[in-house]
Image 1 (cartoon, rainbow, N blue to C red):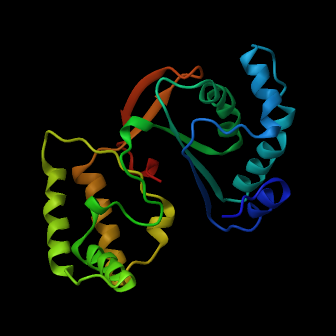
Image 2: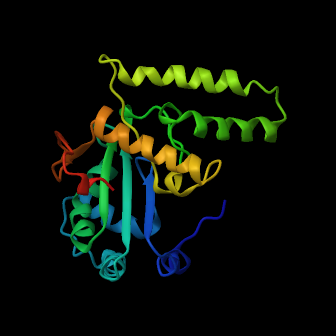
Image 3: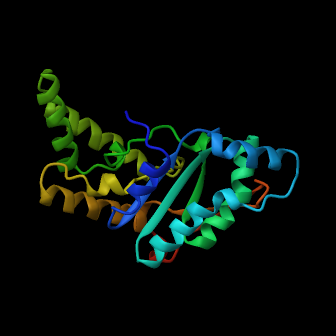
Length: 224
């Protein structure tokens, strides 16, 4: 996989048309351009954020054009120093127009960037996924049994003694599995799950990383 940095990285943000979405799964990203500002944070010195202005200006220009930049940071609790530093920088990103969310690592058991989580599958979506796997790997065809098992496992969603947290990426929603009718059915299933079966929450932190709690999302316009 090619690592895109510097001018090539910024150039990508001039070519997308809708939403740029990024998941940060590591607790620390010690890039050279952040070394100085991070040291200022550790030694409790003032930072004028001059190093950060190119990114903030880019975000302002992109969001002013009606496009979106979204980021999810998966963080360990209690937070490492790098996360605490990021929480002091994030308000500037958010003020510029970037949508940043934090998700405690201990709540995640599986992450799939291209597909809807299996436990949320419709039978048709599950069949399309499994059929592709069977054909690609040339393994024994137990498609009917596999789909049946997945639908049975889905019943755990309706048990009152279980709680789930899901990350469904935009790419998963845009990746066609099966055909259009399969995707329409799957998207309809996700909407039904969000409004009827599964509660969505916004997670709240103070700037120093203190966990404040979660607020249920009740306004559909806040669901992105």
